[in-house]
Image (cartoon, helix red, strand yellow):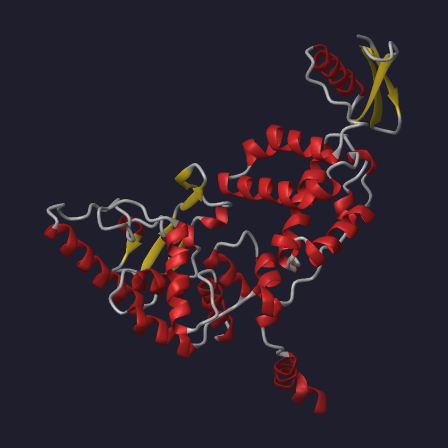
Length: 384
């Protein structure tokens, strides 16, 4: 096989190479690819593509469909760079919401209008049995496409990320965040009584951690004398089973101060746990055992926790999911006037911008208060 490199811009190149004779037509087949970098790097990439096609592994980037590209993106990047749970979600979204609608479009022919039409169609009939798909779910589709097509642009498969030119549908705040009232919190804790679920719900309300994080906490991560918990890892559940993993970002590994009422709750929980273990002849729980383990010390699953809370909420007639406990925690901090940076660090967001994007509407409009502050600071000087 032969090929050559032709300059297209200051640091962009067209790679042209011969991939042999078409067995059906008898004509020579030529393939093209785009590349960004130095000429030497372009020549190395050309040699790689020629070798790849010689081995029968090549895909013509100019003719690859979106479905074909997403398959290679899954195999070459996503499988090695995202968590198992995230990979499952990506594959489900691609299989159900992308490929059936625009999978046959050539990736280089994909335009913003294709994505806009896709988002509109999904909102009309993209859900189960043709029901509308929520704006938030369509937003997940957009994020998968944005990430995959971003790599397509970086790798030179397409000239630009067309998903960056399209905005996903806006998500109503009321649809995105459901929180519990003070009365509902009290009713829930009273309803749970001494059940296993109560200390877990209390911990989620008092710390704002995620469900995978709460189920991964060990007794050695808790310092009840100082009122601190160290979040070091998270429990992930996929179709292949359960596994502990590190936080998504360095900000996910954090210390959280817990209130005295939660300290008391955890002391009572540990006493009950130790009493049960001793009654079963298991001995005292070691420091590296899970705080919210099953009766035999084994790991509880995130799905179990979600389902148990959903049943309890249904019994009480409360419209709140398990993740809503995290939102409830944050809403209480905001209502008390805690600054966004402290909140962001407490709940493990990568940066305060994420916190503001999710919870920004909860911050009260304090512009009138700003005017009062300026009056105190400068009013007397201006009147002198």
